[in-house]
Length: 612
Image 1 (cartoon, rainbow, N blue to C red):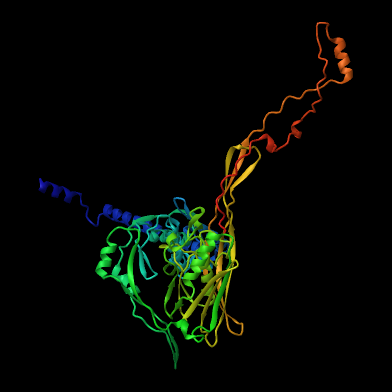
Image 2 (cartoon, helix red, strand yellow; image 1 turned 180 degrees about the vertical axis):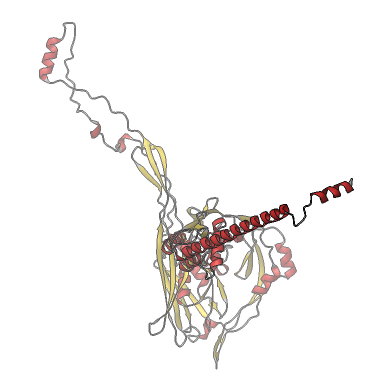
């Protein structure tokens, strides 16, 4: 079978010198030549067309197709159009306000606080350079490739990352139900420890990432309103040994060294009145507060006994006004001043307002007064002490000391301008500063005749600079208005339940001048946002009582006519009704007289945020 097939193939195979074979070969060669020619022509044509295309593209002033900047399509735009588009997007982002929400808590963060900067022109130049390389083949490939595949160019955006971190830290401390760590203070020879409470913490890493993406992404997907992500967290257990390390000290007398000049601050000797093991056993029992007795050994010579050499110069001073008629609040101010008055801080030491004042309790003499809470103002123990911390803050700034921790109020206050306040909340928000000077400083604080004063004394340097603190409001946030219909109030009448308060944004600068008055530096030290308190108004819906139908008395002539036309069976009254004037709708008074409507009791008003 296989042999027959081989023989058949031999028969079919033509000899190479046969005419038929030669024709077959020539036909094949012609086809190859034609196909090759067509391919060459197509290649030449493609090269020619693409070359013309590339040259045309290079000569164009527009960005090639398929290019986006921050996911914004800029294809076909010239430099000016693309620049103006991106510049506008960036300006919108810089003026945007992020609103963080968690339950009833809200916080506004103006993007302007982050000092956002972007080199838009350089980015547009990068986009224009696409498809305009010196190599024409590279250009052809780039242009053709971008017809099917997009390329996104990112703008190099810079912003103040530290400011974002600070704002989120403050936000995490302000949330309702935030975890509170244990606190302690030394008061009247006793160590008072307040245990912490479990609560929530802000998921700072996530919200930080979200806001950063919002700053650097100029596309339309940016959301200004965000829900704060939180995590549950347990408070730290009380560390007795760590507290002991912090407060334990040996007694030390104050003295002055003349060469080189140096002031050594006195220290009281402090030790536990019980063993550390007994203290640990004490705090292991669940209680609201723990009291550990202390052994106090007073120094024989105190720094304030060294005379005027120790604190000869006034380094910083600040005053604020208060309502002396508000007795309870004034009491709190007096307690705060007494606590910090005469306090001496050695170089390098940190002052904690919360630790020096201790927990605000009625047992410590504090009274109920207005304090800020989420959404408004209510009474709380120690209301008003933030006025002293704010006054101290300004004296510290003027004295050119280092600020370790400071927080602005949720809302503006009446006793100090926005940007110059320092609020505190025991166990959560503190005001801390560091003595960054060469010599000790002493705080003097008192209230008198409606004025709270804080002075800081120490020793000035040879060429002491002058400090000026300038705060300014950059924008106002109008208070929202809520209107509640009230059927007990006449229609058209309104009653204010809560006056409300506008919010604002502020920036504060520290200006440093040389002794000769030359401006050395002008540094922004804070950018603060103050929230709004809602204005609540009751709107009357009570309809006015219906007016009686008007009675028209006929004239004497009409009366005669009517009498003549009446039938004998009709009897008329001998008395003539008094004339009732006609009342038209335009004459109806808009307000119902007070005598016509029962008096509506005045609604209870939320205390104004005059001071906290």
